[in-house]
Each structure stands twice: as C-alpha cells, then as structure tokens.
Picture 1: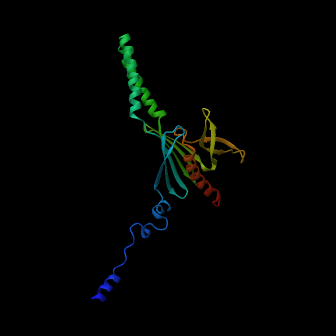
Picture 2 (picture 1 turned 90 degrees about the vertical axis):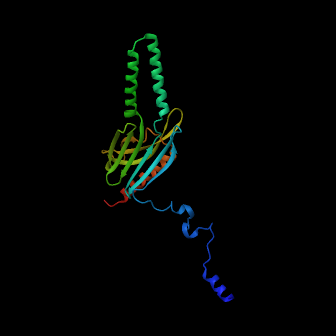
Picture 3 (picture 1 turned 30 degrees about the horizontal axis):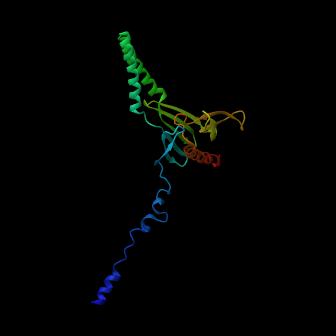
Length: 227
C-alpha cells in the first residue's frame, strides 16, 4: 500500500505557483505582449495634452512598412458651451425686443444664431487632423471638421525635403509645431516653403516627437531604398 501511494504522488505533476506566471507571460512579464510588432492595420491610441492644456488623443495606424497614418483628435464640441452661447444671444435679443417691441429682433437673432452655428461647425471647429505618410507616393494632410467636411492636401514625396519640429514664440511662451519642408526646385539645399501641421490641435512636444519619429522612419526608408 505504501509503495502504491508513493507511485501516485510521483505521477501527479507539481502545480506551478500562482504568482509566477512564467509559462504564459514569457521573459517580459505582462508587458511582453505590448512590445511585440504591431500587425498591419492595427491602431494604437495614446492620450496627450495640447499647448493650452486641453486633452487630445494621438492614433497611430500602420498599414504597411512604408505607410502610416497619424491622427490627432482634439476635444469634441461641448453641448454646454454651445447652449450657453445660444442662450446669451437669445437673451440679448429678447432684451432688445422688450425695449423696442419689434418682432424682427427675435427673427434676426434666430437667423444669426443658425448662420453662425453653421459657419462655426463647417469652417472653424476641427475635430481631427490626420497625416497619411506613404513612402512611395507622398504625404496627405486631412482636416476633419465638426460638420463632417474634410479638407485634404497632398504633397508628393519628391517635393518633401524633410519633416522637422520647429519652435516659435507665442504670447511670451515658446511653443513647438511640426512642419514639412518643401524642396526648392532650383536649389537642392534650399527650402521653397514650410507647411505647418496640426495647427488646430496644437499638440505639445511629447506628442510631436511621436509623430516626428514615425515620419522619419519612412523618410529614412525612402532615402536608403535603391533608386
């Protein structure tokens, strides 16, 4: 009986400790899965702050080794602020109506509010700014407005000299911005134009560095590729 009990104890495998997790996580622990290569088409999103302190989000999507999409999404339109502005206009119109007893004041207030809202959503409020970098074609810059309208600018890769982070002084404060340097056709060492990026969201330096590195990786691939 003692020999049979000893055989059963040797046949049962030892259970690994619960806290080790070495057989599942690998050498990097729980963070090892995040450090692996991202699959094409997968999006990665991180939160940052703009130059004014507003929360923004950077979404990176790698379509292929030479094609990446980088989008900065700003804060959404707040219904509270929109309602406050509309109420202020209508209260002022009602006060004028009470003084003048002219119904045209109220009609004009409603008309001005609607026209101003359409102009703000269609031409001013930008929800997202994206950058699509294709090593073999060029760089596409897209601005998506709150109304759904999109404004797109395409720059051929042959015109791109470099992508750099520049600095400027605004309201006694140093701010950073990303820009594309366009090649001067008459001078290989010269720059014909500077195209600033993310002018609406105005990300801080830590967010710009992430975008800058992604752009430089594709530009370096283009420079080292055989002609």
